[in-house]
Image (cartoon, rainbow, N blue to C red):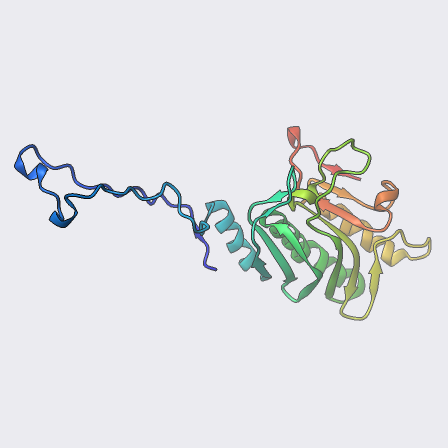
Length: 231
């Protein structure tokens, strides 16, 4: 499906005839005895237009080398809604397993962090590129646990949970808190976590609470005064 930005297509109207006899003569005499049927106010076909911001975001994904496809709008009721979701399966040569369903803004933010922070950090720490990011949750219609009904950023496609990071050299890095003597892995995970705070508005992981003991949670929730939760 080809995506096009919102444009003002306008409404075509017939020219107003000048006063006189010509105003009484229809353009098609055969229709003179029949009432004119106005076109329906809305087309029965789904709109192919999306906001310019979404078009620009997809250009951003393409510039980042992201493999993605557009999905149908998601509306699971309540706050569980993503108007223009995308499914990303790779960021350059880095595979995403399983493919993640996200808002385009979250997909672009995560992809930029992957290319500019995660991959370079892996090369510095392990002399290896990143093969696969194993994610545990992207879009999901749910509330924040223990929040008394506050919707999770997963419910709007603005969050992603990373469980494992697999490197090209065969190293499989589990996000769970490493042992005391796993110095390299500990340094890698600490760097990945800290760098994420420059891209996301929320970064949570092992040590924050029991719910995040086995993964990094990244999201782009907008808060008052631009507050960032990096814990």
